[in-house]
Length: 208
Image 1 (cartoon, rainbow, N blue to C red):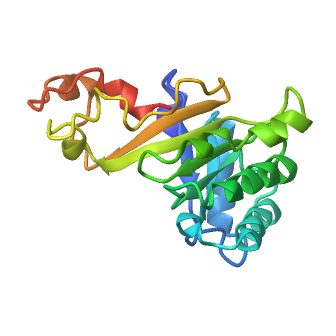
Image 2 (tube, one colour):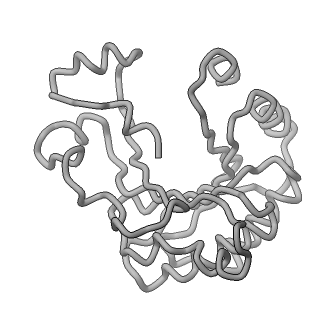
């Protein structure tokens, strides 16, 4: 990744996950690796599981604080996995967003991964912070789809052409969406463009 970032104009974000979260102490290998990534301009996102919204807020914020203690100044943002699909627990992610901006610095990126098109409320988790801190606060990215590349483009659900996974049209520039695909067995975009599954504009699926 370091070599790739040094030899391209493409922007990279890397999620680090020491132990399904920060673990119990800093690890030298992660400190070294994160430093190398940051030195070549890669955005480092620190992984925190959230139990599809069921995890206590105190547990999640404690994980954020551990990262900031173990790897001070090294988390450009946070990747909150197992995000909620419904409305009931979306308020917790406003708390997480606020805590990230305070603990990691205003401007920290927050990614939430429900893996499905969530309730619209999840797309506004940065609004409270922005309201009390005008002009501050980081990007919010909602991962509204997570599945294999063949499934994404097999034509049965036509996800790449419909608006179902995507955010409401009225969100501000603070909010973006992404889709997460895996099992993509190709090595170049030229090879992707030759995909027999009829994919178009494939590069769009890799960036928020």
